[in-house]
Image (cartoon, rainbow, N blue to C red; front, side):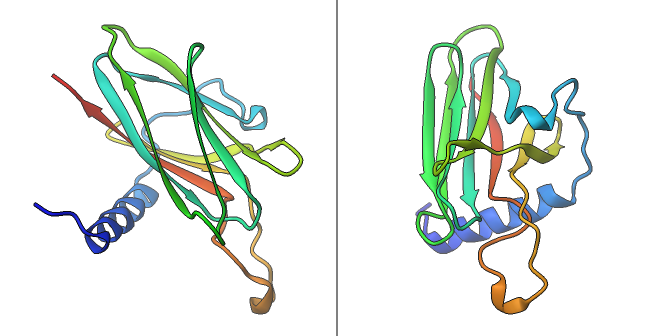
Length: 157
C-alpha cells in the first residue's frame, strides 16, 4: 500500500483525537512535572515510535535519551512542525529512557503535563504550557503546549 501525506495526516489527526479523549490509565508515579524530564521503560525487543508536534513560536528541542545514547529533533510552529522519533530496544530486558523538551533560546527546560496512556503503552505527553491569549489577533500556533509527543510501542518478534 502506498503512503501519501493525506493518509498520514488522517492517521495522526485520528490518533491525536483518540489519545486526547482517553483517560489516563497509568499515573506518572513519583515523577514531578517541574523536573522537566519524563522517564519510562521500553519493553524488551520492541520499538518506541512517535511524532513530536511543535506548537509554539519559539524553537523547541525534544530529546529522547538513555544513559548511553540520545536523539534530538528541533522545530517550531512557523518552521518544522512535525518530526519523527524512534527508539529501538534490542535487549532482552526493559530499557529506561527519558524524554526532555527545552526552549533552545535560553536553554530553558519545559515541564511536562497532560500525560495520557492508551492500552497502558501508547503515550501522549505535552511539554510546556501556553495560555491562550484573549484577543483573537494575538493567537498564534497551537495551544496549550509548546510541543506534544505521541508515541506508540511496536512489539517485535
